[in-house]
Image (cartoon, rainbow, N blue to C red; front, side, top):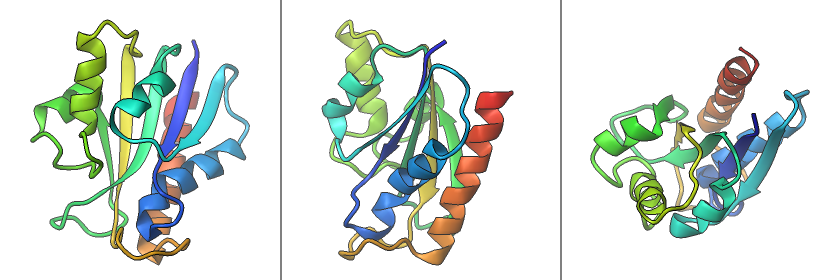
Length: 152
């Protein structure tokens, strides 16, 4: 089974790089065979090409939710994300639920299993390469959770 771990974010926008940071940490671990780690700053429909050709995908990204503490890690399946208010959690132009639905509706071979790890951001608008301490801690927690899940 080919598994893809996809870290999403912007390296230069503070906590928006949480998914990239977590993916980088995961790439330093001894992962199961046929597990690929990629990082991207692509958003919306540009993600679809990166999700083809695998049976399982983990997407790690920052999220904006003022009701949660910075660094909180949320886990969703694609169907759970779709059942939430569209575009509420992941802050890129076309929400992830909409993007995945578009891919499926247009005949793209989407992974049958898509798991999203979203890390609650504190600041995604300040230019800089550093994560805030709570978000860095959340990204490390997401790494541990994903390692447990892919090695189970």
